[in-house]
Image (cartoon, rainbow, N blue to C red):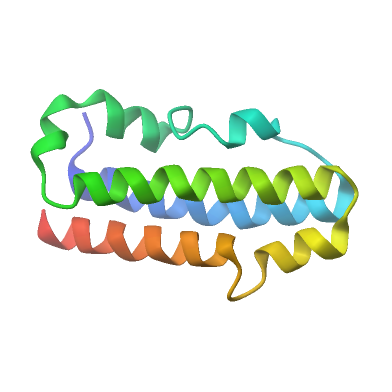
Length: 119
């Protein structure tokens, strides 16, 4: 079982990779993920760990991280759906600084870093 610090560090890296996955989808219409799968926060390794370890539910910041993680996946799925629909400019704008995706990503990473520091 991963320690909190290890799991959070891996989650930060894995969720940063979503920007690459989404950029590839925008540029090449390549889908590594289905939109409905991208929207699910329980399919990634971090989500499975987060929801699978009952002891974590008592940890400080758990509820906040859980909610932000779910929001991140919904925003990523929105961008992916737009990209795969061929609306490149709209998908790029949906990932731009200040976008809902960018905000969800930044808030999740900030909460993850705070959680890691607290544990």
